[in-house]
Each structure stands twice: as structure tokens, then as C-alpha cells.
Length: 156
Image 1 (tube, rainbow, N blue to C red):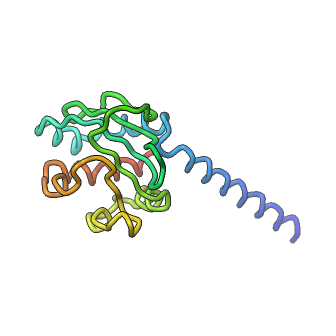
Image 2: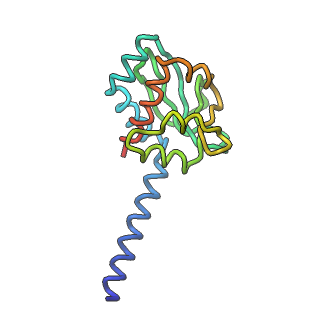
Image 3: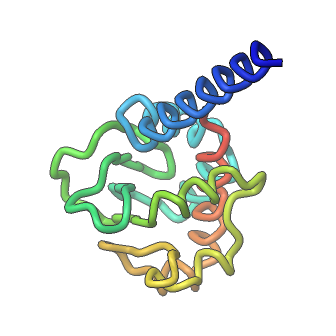
């Protein structure tokens, strides 16, 4: 019985440490490059944004941090570069508490519109840079925006 308890405790500890190491990778250069690849494979994002000639530099990070952690550059709907944030000029800077990102990325279809409308002070998404209301009103941007969270959740 004691041996089984020790094995279970060791296994639980291993799983916990694995989840912590995966969490630390969120928005790292490696993670952002995986996001780039996943984004570019998703025609719902790329084709819709190409139609509106969408070009932006988008950063991601955690609420309360001085700077975002990761960044992508989108040209005509395609992510052309991705990596760690290096003081690039941004069109969008999306922040949320770590727990919120974890919840959204664990959801099968990403966050709902309702989740994204939740005010930042309630744990929702905060736009440090970018016109959130204009984007939410534009179906050509809103669909790919929501889909990008689903794509994020596919990255392991």
C-alpha cells in the first residue's frame, strides 16, 4: 500500500511539473513559431484576413506585465514572422491573466464571444494597444480573431 502511494505521489508530481513547464512555454519564441505554423495552416483565418488586406503586428502576454512576451507579424493574413517580443511597434497587444489564457486554450473551441466581451477587470482580455471595439464590430476581423484562439489551443 505504501509503495503504491509513493508511486502515485511521484506520478502526480511528474504531471504537475510537466504542466508547469508547459505553462512557462506559453508565448515563448518556440511557442509563437508553432502558433505561426498553425495560423498559416488555417484557411478560415488566412483567407478571410487576406480578403481585407489585413497587416498587423500582434503581441500577446499576461495582465500586469510591463511588456508582452510573444509577437507575430501578419502580412495579408499570413504570419510572416513570430517570436519573442523585442520592442516592435505594435498594432495590437493582447493581455489576460495567466489563468484566463489557460482556460481559453484548454477549451475545445477557444473562448466564446461572451468570454472576450468580459471586461479586463473581471479577468477578461485587455487590449493594451489596438481598437477592440472596431474589431468586434467587423465580422471580417471578428471571425479570424475568435478562430485564432482555437488555433492557439491546438499548440502543445
